[in-house]
Structure formats: C-alpha cells, structure tokens
Length: 58
Image (cartoon, helix red, strand yellow):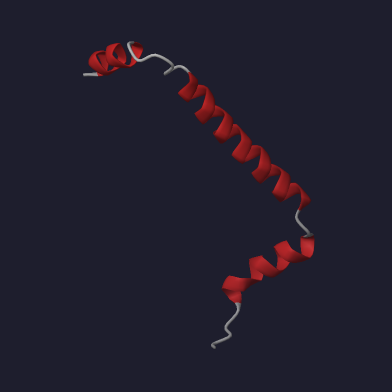
C-alpha cells in the first residue's frame, strides 16, 4: 500500500514543495511560541497559573 502511494506521489509535478512548506510552518510556529514564552511578562504568567486554583463563582 505504501509503495502505491509513494509511486503515485512521485508522478505529481511540483509535489516536492509541500514537505518544505509544512516544515517551514512547523518550525515557524515553534519559533514564535518559544519567543512568546521567553518574552511573556512574569505577572501575566503568575496570574494565569493561579486561575485553576481560584474558587470564584460567577
């Protein structure tokens, strides 16, 4: 089954760009995520970590 899919995909023109695009999106997402984590304000992180522990009922 995999051989069929591999052979079929090899016949499609321009298919080699899709793995590059998906890797770029994956890498870019995690670079932005790491940047956000390291630059987030400590007060915001502290406030968000306490949210599950609060017992305020609206």
